[in-house]
Image (cartoon, rainbow, N blue to C red; front, side, top):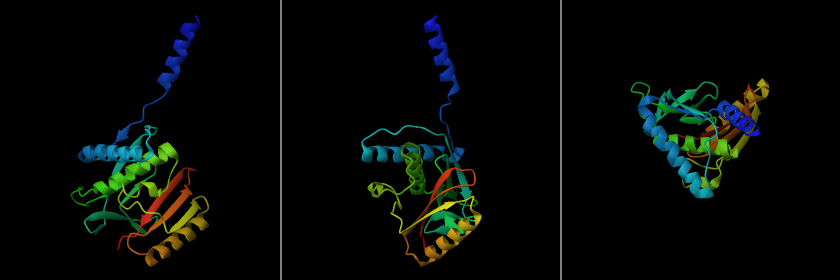
Length: 195
C-alpha cells in the first residue's frame, strides 16, 4: 500500500509540473535555437558548469524604426530611446526590418539569450565582465540606476536622467538599469550608446 501511495504521489507531483517551452517567429526559429545554444555554450564554458532550462521564453520581433550601421532598432516610447533587443528572462524582443521583417542581428539575439540564461540560472541581470569577449556589446556600465515603477515620480525622474546621460556618453558606452516593474517583477535594461 505504501508503494502505491508513493507512485500516486510521484504521478501527482510529476503531472503538475510543466516543461518550459520556447516560442519563436517561424521564419527565425533556426536562428533563435542556434543563438540560444551558442549563448548557453559560452556561459557554460566560462563557468565550467551546466545551465538548466528553468523558464519558458518567447521571442518576438519588433519593427525597427532606424538602422544603425546595418542593425535595426526601434524607438521605445517608454524609455524614449532606440532599442535593438531586450530580455526580461521570459521574453526576448528583437528589432527587425519594418517591411521585410528580416534583418535580425544574430549578435544581438545571442546577447539577449545570454541574459536569458544568466537571469534564470544565476539571477544575474548584469554584464559581468568575465563574458565580455564572448558577447557583442557586453560592456560594463558607466552609470547604474535602480527604479521601482510603482513610484511614478521617481521613475520619470530616472528616465529623464538616463536620457541626459545617454546624450553625453560616447559610442559603445553603457547605462545599466535594474528595477521592479508595476507587477512586482524584477527587470534589467542595458542602454548601449549607438551613434
